[in-house]
Length: 158
Image (cartoon, rainbow, N blue to C red; front, side):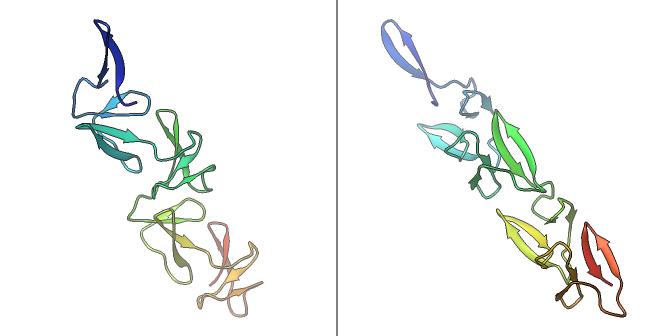
């Protein structure tokens, strides 16, 4: 990889596998015109390579080019040429919520975070049964005069 070894008149010759020399050669010797993020493009001997950034072929490659053995909850498992990717459906301009949904904002009392290079909107209370108030404090129940409203499986005092 990335060249194919062929023999012509008893001489070993290395040949670039892509007909179009501007194409990217992938780990499986296939040729594509692009090498999209989070894959890693590299130039080698004036030819374009597209690399899967994980040492283990079974790992999941994330947007920030880190590798994990599992794809996080609320993320989307995808593959490219038999390699695993773990992606958000929200893109880079929206916030990914704990349930996988996407919004273009993250309003108080929720907290802005980041996971693997992607903006997240986090529910700051530690327990599933906790309720969050507008001042971002957590409680076992909503104090009077507030009522519980469940959004995306979490309890808010409104």
